[in-house]
Structures are given as structure tokens and as C-alpha cells.
Length: 81
Image (cartoon, rainbow, N blue to C red; front, side, top):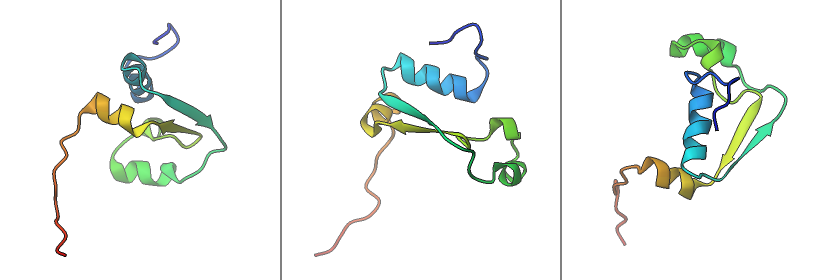
């Protein structure tokens, strides 16, 4: 749920709001910063402040994610016996 301290334009806030509104089951995991976002962010063309989950990770039920985003799933290969 958005509160008065959350920036509704922030990608993280939008994601959390989307998951909460959809009833997704997830868990946030705070940890020491990992990764090299300060190097990769300029390569991707985004600000470091927009970089993902360095000191926070999310465990999200995949079936909840699929129910919310309704991805198109297609067979891309077949196995010959």
C-alpha cells in the first residue's frame, strides 16, 4: 500500500504497489550491497538510483507473478524421441 513517504513514480514503489494490489505473495530480503550496478547502470542508460535490488532481494511466488502479468507462453522447441 502506498503511503505518504513513498514516491509513486519510483519503479520499486510501483512494483511493490502492483504486487500488493494483486495479492502476490512475496518476501523482501535486506542484505549487504552486492553487484556492480555503478558500472553497469551507465551501460544500460539508466541512473544508478533506478538500478535493481543491490541491498534488497525479493522472493516472489512464480504462480502469483504469472497470474498478475499473464505472460504469453509458447512452445519454442519440440523433442524428438
